[in-house]
Image 1 (cartoon, rainbow, N blue to C red):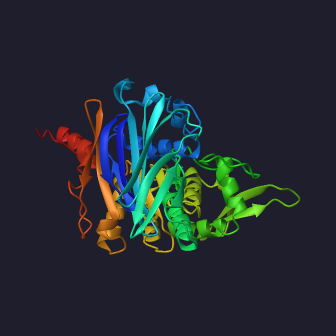
Image 2 (tube, rainbow, N blue to C red; image 1 turned 180 degrees about the vertical axis):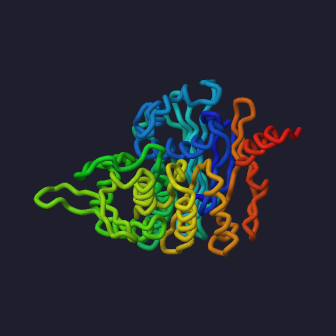
Image 3 (cartoon, helix red, strand yellow; image 1 turned 30 degrees about the vertical axis):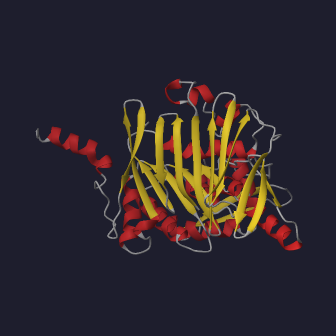
Length: 397
């Protein structure tokens, strides 16, 4: 799980250093920088996936091209660097990975526990450099040879036991890439808009309807898991069915009250959204799901059910799921807070940040949640405009 993100000079974010939780919520006015915080780790992921690209390519997220380095650097000041880093934990190991991007080079930093490795490379970077570091654990000493992405480890005193320990250490160091490869996003543009699908090749960050459809088709258990949550959230059963005599599949929902089946594309845009979102969240290879406005096109009752079930999911120990989301919905945030008050979600497992613009720079103010589900500030970010309208209506100065 990720436990910290640091971002500098990326879009409107001059500097942000934020603690994360199983559920981390960013809310605030439109265009205040919430989505930028979600996009930053994907830029870092692009570098890990393929460092041999031009710097501008790292800012093409697939579902959205942010316009390259000059478009994304804070205040378009190309003399600065864009810095993005993540800290997290896998199997009890504390891991760190970060990159500082300039126009034609990058400084990479990675670490395991208190051990840090750092190197500067050109961009594009064909992985043709090796940096050597000394590492000691107990009485054992090793040389770590690191390319910026992967490590090999050589013991100072070779033996069968030290060689085995060296291989184990290399595996532990190389988990840093796993932090990033287990990231996924459900962007604004989402849903299933065709009556039938065939499988397609997946990109490194599958977000198109054909890719997500392929994920469902190729996983014999995923449709049933989506259906499990769809029943609880919107009273729907969900199925992926092979069209007889073809290699095509169609997605159907059945209203469990009426028993009438329909194709997902014909069952309302909100229901369509729910199926897509849970297909993304439940992908087995995904640990951290980033979601833009999960409440889009959903009735408030569905929003509440969605938030409740999300809270239940992240607390299931065998799932190892984490969610970071940007929202404009007071209902969604309030439903998460209700889950805290009911003891479903510990207050330490949710972090809320109010995103605001000060001049051209985004700030993220932490909003503390207590054990009763009460949030610091009382969701004033959502009710401020309504309060202004009421004051005007009743002539209150």
